Length: 164
Ligand SMILES: [Zn+2]
Ligand SMILES: [Zn+2]
Image (cartoon, rainbow, N blue to C red):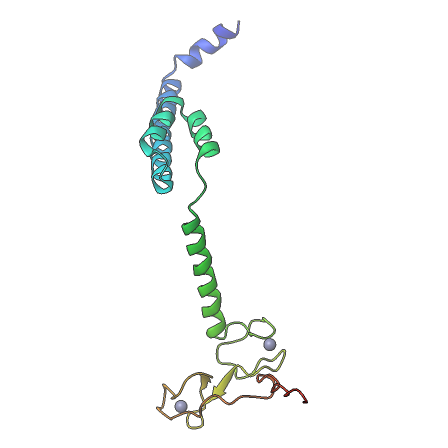
């Protein structure tokens, strides 16, 4: 009964085209999966050719086995990435995008944090532009800058000599 109903569908040109497309998609998908596994295993130093063959034979099942047994990322990679994130954070802080004191976002040309009143930048005496505290000279008008002055909030209290 069902076979009789399906026969015209199965023999139709649309169905043949559709199944051929499915096969093409499956082949492309399989090759992509093999390539991904080979590259990932190569990066982790885990027998890339062996795993490529396993995925070629068992397809998605082999790929899932690889995902389970593959070695974790190298410790070096993880540490490198952490360092990268750290330096990015430091860069953001240096650019004045974040107040180093209260961590609220501020504009890069703010001289003072509007939230906690922390001094962020100094103003050039000649052209009035916002300069980084560490800059020795104004890059816009070449005016020499005072060395960064220690403010009351930034300098820790001088150590009191013990009474003897
Ligand atoms: Zn602040
Ligand atoms: Zn200037």
